[in-house]
Amino acid sequence: MTRKEKLINRLLRKPRDFTYSELEKPLSNFGYEEINTGKTAGSRRAFIKKETNHIIRLHKPHPKPVLKLYQVEYIINELNKEKLI
Image 1: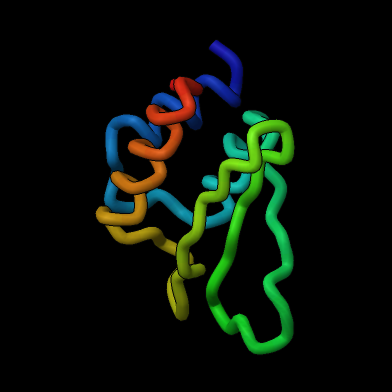
Image 2 (image 1 turned 90 degrees about the vertical axis):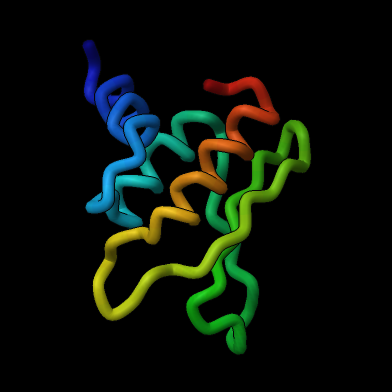
């Protein structure tokens, strides 16, 4: 099993310690790019898949880099909608 597959499987288990940097890797493997939403965006982030114009929006967690459970579930649902997982 590759590192990519391991991260995806870890995401699907809905861990309570999944970090934002761990999220960036599988999303980039699926073809998503993080877009800059401007100077006043603060912690708001968006990942876009340009082929389908699908956007995943979320807040970057701070001060700890760990995603909340609702964010993990949202990402899984969005990837399911796109039939990526």
